[in-house]
Each structure stands twice: as C-alpha cells, then as structure tokens.
Length: 475
Image (tube, rainbow, N blue to C red; front, top):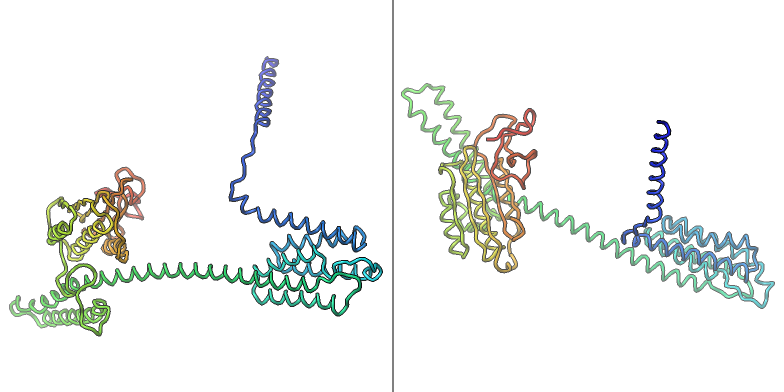
C-alpha cells in the first residue's frame, strides 16, 4: 500500500518537472510596449554618452596629461557621473562638473611647462567641455532663468581665473571656446524652457476659458428659464392678491380679524409681486436701460407674450413640418391640465429637440411621444439618421444643457443619447407632478435592474426612499 502511494507521488513529481522543463524551454519574453521604450530611450542615450565622456577624459589625462590611472579614472568618472546626474539633479551635477574641471586643470597645470613640445587642451579638456555643455543645457531647461544666468557667469569666471589669471605654457587654450559654447547652450535652453512654459500656460488658459464658457452657458440658460417662468410666478401672485381682496365680499358680515388678515395677505402678495418684477425684470432684458426687444431665445415671441403650454404643441409640430421636417405626434393618456411650469418646460424641451433635429440631422424624420402618467409626464423625441451631412451650426450649443436644467429644476430627469449605430438620436425626459412624501424621490430604473441607470431606464418610474428602501417601489 505504501509502495503504491510512493509510486503515485513520484509519478506526479516527474510529471510536474517535465511540464516545468517544457515551460522553461519554450518560454518567450514578451517585448516591452513602445511607450516604455520611448520613455527610457533618452536615458539610455545619456548613459552611453556619459560612458564615452568618462573613457575619453580618462584616456586624455593618462596619455597627454601624464596623470596616474587612478586619478584619471576618478576625474573621468566624475565628468561622466555629472552627465547622468544632470537628468535628476542639474544643480549638483553642475557643481560636480565644475569641481572635476578645476581638479584636472590644477593637476595638469604643473606638467604643462615641463613638456615644451606637447600641447594639452587646457583648462578644459574636450570631454570636459562636452559634459559641461550637456549639464548646462539640462540646467537651463529645469531651473529659472536667473539660476541659469548665474551658472553661466560662474562658468565664465572660473574659466577666466584658470586661463587668464593663473595661466600655463605650452597648452592649447579652450577657455574662449568653452565660454562661447556655454552661452549658446544656455540661451537655447532658456528659449526652449520659455516656449514650454508658454505652451503650458496656454493650455491652462484654454482649460480655464472652457470652464468659464461652460459656467457662463449654464448661467445664461438659467437666466433664460427664469425669464420664462417670471410670467407664471407673477400670475400666481396676482391671483393670490385678487382672491384676498375679493374674499371679504363673499362672506356676510365678515369679522374684523378676517378682514385684517386678508388685507395682510393681499399686501404681502403685492409686495412680493413688486419685488419679483423688480428683480426678474433685470433678467428679462440684457440691457435694462433700453426698451425691451423681441425675444432672442429662438421662441419667436415677444418678452411679455403669454408663455406656451402643451395646447400649442400641435401648432409647434405643424410649424416644424412647414420647415421641412417630417414629424409625427403621439399622445398617450388622457390630456389634463398640468402646472404651468411643467407645461412650459415640456413644450420647450420638445421645441429644442425638434430644433436640434432640423439643425443637426437634415433629411431625418422625427417622432414626438407625450405620455401622461398618473405621477408625471414623459416626453420622448426620436429622430432617424440624417440623409445628408449637416451644415456648420451657428448655435451656441446650449440646447441639451437648457433641457436638462428645465427637467432637473422640476425634480425630473432628462437623457439624450444616440440610438444604436445608425446615427439616430433620442431625447427622453420625465417631469413629475405628484407630490411625494418626505424622504422619497423619483428615480429611473429599467424593470429588473439593480441600479438606476440613465441608459437602461425608459419610462419606468419608482419611488426611492434612500434611508429604508434603496431599491424603491415600482409605480
């Protein structure tokens, strides 16, 4: 029994070893993505350049400078290390490059006079000039202009002290060349850095402009909605005032307390109406000091004309047909009078949706469906794909934003999205009219869905109580 178990274990181990051997034999390393290669390619080039600089400086110091190999290796490694260090810490790299240059210049200085026939590049070696130029370039790209200028001045000062004030015989002078090339490199780096900062600032300004434009668009739409709702609110306040004035005449011998209370209600209504007209009157016109002009919102009505209701929806559809768009209107449910704000918002949503079809989908057909539900009204505007390209739009792009603001203002929701891949479009909005209990809100959810999703919800309304019933009860 134990022998059989041992054989089974051995076979299993051998099988696993064979699989491992095959995996190791056939394993293939996946290449790195191009983005990684592109990101690390400059670092690899700099490391290769640093290696060349270090080896070149070592060879020159040993052969022409007659320095010991240990000292030459130390100075060459410092020059190459400054090149690599400049990628992360340009200021310490600059100090390291200057220190290495001064060190090798001092070390070679005593040997220049003794070798009358040799001409050594002093105080800068060829490799030292290359390393220092690279360090200066990265420095000017990474730090402020003042710091770059200070580094350039110190470079010129060190060169002047070594070459002009101290000096040496039988050498090939490289101070002027090093200073001139340093000036060119620093100016180039400052120019590139300034251009990069200008582009970054332009990007920030563009982003701020776009955000400001979106904020201004939202405020304009809200002002437009406030202008249109002015008549509705003013009408209700006027009715309150008139009813309070007429109420005492409907009661025989009304008590003085009732008259006093009704007079207070009427006076408060008149004061509120006056303040409302004073505040919202500013919103009705862009220039309050000038006479009001016809409405520019695209409604084709005068500023003080009665606001449209759903009774004028068939006329809107007929006018749209006259403009060349094939439109069908379906009304589901029994027509009933809705609050003025709801009827105005639904009318404007349909009007804006049909205007978008005319503007952005030439040759398409549209269908308007108005559904009167017990707890609200649902409107859907669907259009087919356009038959020809749309001309450039001259609109301000406020349509969808305005429709969404109208729906959310009344506690509803509005969605607009493409229909499939054929190029059609759908605008869906639900505006509630039923009053819910405290803590309950309207939400849209498709049957069977676990979360409210604007892409799944189409006319399925639920009451949602976030505290006790997160899934809601279907109406």
